[in-house]
Amino acid sequence: MDEFELDDRKTKILNAIIRNYLKTGEPVGSRTISKYTDLNLSSATIRNEMADLEELGYIVQPHTSAGRIPSDKGYRFYVDHLMAEKDREVDEMKQFVIEHTEKVEHLLQQAAKILASNTNYATMVTAPSYQGNKLKFIQLSYVDEGQILAVIVTDGNLVKNKIIPVSGPIDNETMLKLNIVLNSTLNGLTLEEINLGTIARLKEQAGIHSDIIGEVLDTLSQMMLQEDDIRVYTSGTTNFFKYPELSDTGKASELISTFEEKQQLASLVTENLLDENSTGIQVYIGNESSIQTMKDCSVVTAVYELGEGVRGTIGIVGPKRMDYEKVMDNLKVLKNSLDGILNKPKGKT
Image (cartoon, helix red, strand yellow):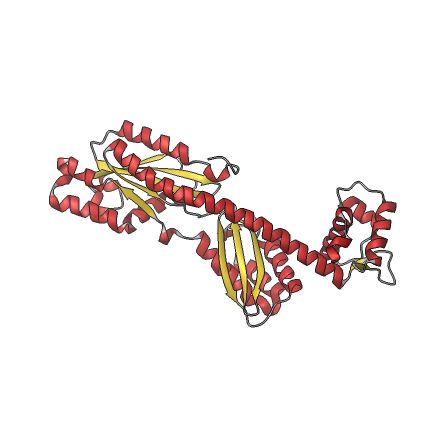
């Protein structure tokens, strides 16, 4: 098989030739490659290796130039190995995220219960939200003649998969071009930084496949703006009955209903998440809260950050005469245990 013809040194030199040619469009010489690779080889050695690559059919020499350009066989080798490498990266990323997502969701549910038990108040903990998160990379890959798979990874190591329908088969070279166009333009940007000019340039570069760019951007929007679908884990609503000022039937049922519906809770915590500097403890007393049913309560919240840009809110709701010192201490302990979880290397909890 072709891949067994190339040792590690030839593979690195071929990759360097192709990457340089993709970037410049100019034939690539041995002196350029000697600066481009980390092999620390002389130009003479690289010339010998390039001669072997030419003999094997991976590169060709235009008749007017001393440099080489990739052949179809060279492109095929590059594309197949690049896709395999990206598949491995995505598989590793998925496994990392799956492991941590399952742990985090369970942890947040348990955290709400423990917090309610420790404070004797009602508690809420939101799942992480991704506002302001930066795009890490995008990979498009072939599924079948009518579909491709888009894998989008953000800075917080969060992964979103989207099957995109296509009107006909897309070859690997076109897929590679789309991947290069998307990643070179979008990597490191937040959703807010992707403007109409950026989108227009992307679609122009994608040509007849501009609809794929549109699908990727739509998926990116759904992934990075999820404040309308924030999951809220709650516990301890029966604690409202422990306090006379909250325990009459009307007030208690309204408060419990607010916790069960969760929509208003989500709107309250979104205020904190949208403020990137809001990482400390916030206290809302009575009418300071935006939720009418909590006008006789105090709400104390803190923002935790699982990884860069991946944030959620912890909240405690009780009577205005709550033990603020105890509440703040509990919030700080929980916040510290959640901060940075997604930044920790594998094998650590």
